[in-house]
Amino acid sequence: QVQLQESGPGLVKPSQTLALTCNVSGTSVTTSAYYWNWIRQAPGKGLEWMGVVSFSGEPRYSPSLKNRTSISWDTSKNQFTLQLRSVTPEDTAVYYCARAPGYSSTYYPLRYDSWGQGTLVTVYS
Image 1 (cartoon, rainbow, N blue to C red):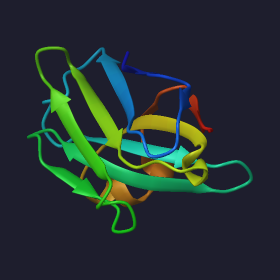
Image 2: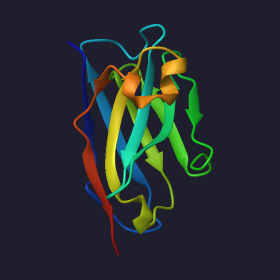
Image 3: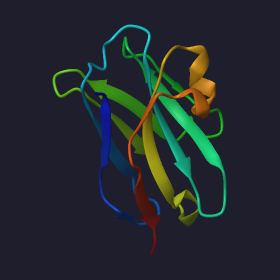
Image 4: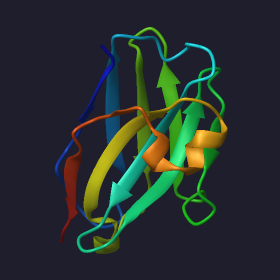
């Protein structure tokens, strides 16, 4: 059974870097044709896709966030990470990691087949 679990600080100050980790169990992040995503949902808003790292380690980012976002994986720990720089209160959201079964599924969160439970990150001063 594939399981994903987000971890990281729940509070971040403005201008700092938000760093989250998604621990994966039940499969390997290098399993062919799977893509590992970060998605967030701000209060009262819909899901926002932030970016992805492929089974081969190649990242891809949302155009609106690419200047502030880095996503990578660590195969030795079977996990992937998100860094979001220069955060503001508008970055307050529940952050999810999730697996997409195939490149084309990346853009459609409803097609993701495994999700973490989500972690709330609040940006406050």
